[in-house]
Each structure stands twice: as structure tokens, then as C-alpha cells.
Amino acid sequence: MNDRARWLLPVLSPFLAIAAALLVGAGLIAIAGVSPLKAYSVLFTESLANYYGFSNTLTKTAPLLLTSLGILVALKAGQFNIGGEGQIYMGGLGSALVGLYVHGLPLVLYVPLALLGGFCLGGLWGLIPGYLKAIRGVNEVITTLLLNYIAQNLVSYLVSGPMKDPDAPTPYSALIDASAQLPIILPQTQTHAGILLGVLATIILWVVFARSPLGYQIETVGQNPIAARYAGISVERTIMLVMALSGGLAGLAGSGEVMGLKYRLFENFSPGYGFDAIAIAFLSRGNLAGVLLTSLFFGALRGGANVMQRSAGVPVTVVYAIQGLTVLFIAISLVLERKVVAPPQPPAPLAATTTET
Image (tube, rainbow, N blue to C red; front, side, top):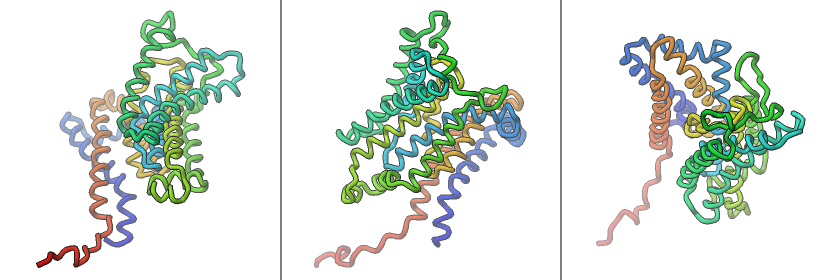
């Protein structure tokens, strides 16, 4: 394969994966007895071209963007953070604790403090598996996955007991202080400043990875930890740092849900954003602009799903199937890319291939 094709295939494969998922999804929609053209027209027109629909898309994009950025940071260092969902819950808890039990602060201090509470608690939830991996050699995929369930059940316990609003018919906390709530950026909608926080985080990470020694350090550890050690980089410290940062970014996603959307801590307040973010991080192929665009695509799918069901009669589950198919096709593209793009291996030395007689 020529050099141009080697460069183009990694760029095109995410788009091909999405196109293939939409094509198979069109078949599912046709089986349901609905025109795929009409269904997709409703889905993307209402979620991207309509003011209220686009605001809904941005609201759902914000937690996806922040969490997938966190997972991407871990991937840059060669770590697989599967715990974004639990870190979202812990971030929401951290901001709720500040919003409920800290009082008397002006808005200019209260919002950053509540965000910091979410970042720190989410970061702690990422640091735990980071420490276990770096110091004890425990696989981070297992620990981050298991910590999801601990975080979800911890929040469930707290909003069902110690933090439950006395007048609540279902498990949720009291309203957080008004000074700790994120401002609405689109009038008459639920779109809050969390999406701006996600864009700002994307820009900061671009600067870190493109211009700073820390970004070089993280990528060196991810590409070749042995070489990183020879260069004097502490691999263990870097792993713990990126896992804490990864958890902190996912924690900010939970902060946005509590501070900008629900204004209280709910049981099961995340509809699976942490797991969608894994697909987004892999689909973006390590590109920060790709994370932003792919998060918007997944946000549009989530934002337009109910509209598509009401207007075109297509079940919401078809949208979830398209998301799953996208992940499947990007996984297939990665396998094919390794086979096609990988440079040919040199032939084995003659001495190694001959046998003594």
C-alpha cells in the first residue's frame, strides 16, 4: 500500500464506520415499516437544525464530550479507563455535596468550588485504579469497571437515605444552592454552560499535548514505557496522573448534570454516558477535534431519538442499535487497518529457516 493510502485510511475509517452503521440502521428502520430517508431526515433535522432540538443535542453532548476527553487522556498513556460512568456519578456527588452543604458564597466562587468538588471526587475515583495499576500491577480495565457499580450504589444509598429530600417521593436530594447552579446559555432551553466547559477542556488538552512537556511525557509512556524509563520519566507517576485527570474530566460531566440540568442529585441520573464515551474515544482515533465532532454526533442521536419515535414511528431502540453498530464497525476497521496498513515484516534470516542435516 502506498504512503497516501496509509495516511488516508485512519482518517476515513471512522466516517466509513458511521456510514456503515447508518446503512445497517436504515435496514432496521425499513423492517419496522418506515422510510429510512424520512426517519433520518427527522432525526438530524430536529436534532441539528431546530433551535430547541439543537439545544437538546448540546445538553446531551456536554457530558459525552467531557467523559470521552477523560477516556482519551487515559488512552494517550496506554491506559483503558472503563470507569467513566462511575466517575460521572462521583463527580455529581462531589458537586452536590458542595451545593447542599456549603453556603454564603458569591456565584463567582460557588460555581468553581462546586466544579472543583466534582473534579476532585471523580479524580479520586480514577486515581484508585491508577494507583492499583502503577504500584500493584492490577489490570485497570477490571478495577475501573467494578468501581462503576460501587459509585452507582453509593449514590443510590445516599439519595435514598442520608441525602434524601424529606419531601421526595423517589430517591433524590434537595435542590442545590442557586448560586452553585450553572448558567443557561441558550434562552428558554436547558442548555447550560457545561458544553462551554467541554469545549474549553478540549482546547486546553490540545495545548497540553501539542505544546507542553507533560503532553510529551504522557504520549511517550503510552507509546513505549521502557523508552520513557530510560528518558527519566516516572511511568508509575504518569499513570496515576492521567488516571486521576481522566476521572476528573468525567467527574466534571457529572457536575454539569447536577449543577446545570437537574439541580439536585438523583439516583441513576446518568443514562449510560460513560459507556457511550468509550465508543466516542475509540471512534475519534486519538484526535481531540474528532472527539468533539463524534460527541456531537452521539448527542444528536440521543437528542433526536424521541423526536424520531414521535414523528416517524421508529422505536428509540433503533438509535441505540446504530450506536452499537458504530462501535462494532470501528472495531472491525481497526482490525482491517492493522492488516492493511501495517508495514510488511522482513523475511526471517536464512539461518533461522534452515535445519541442520
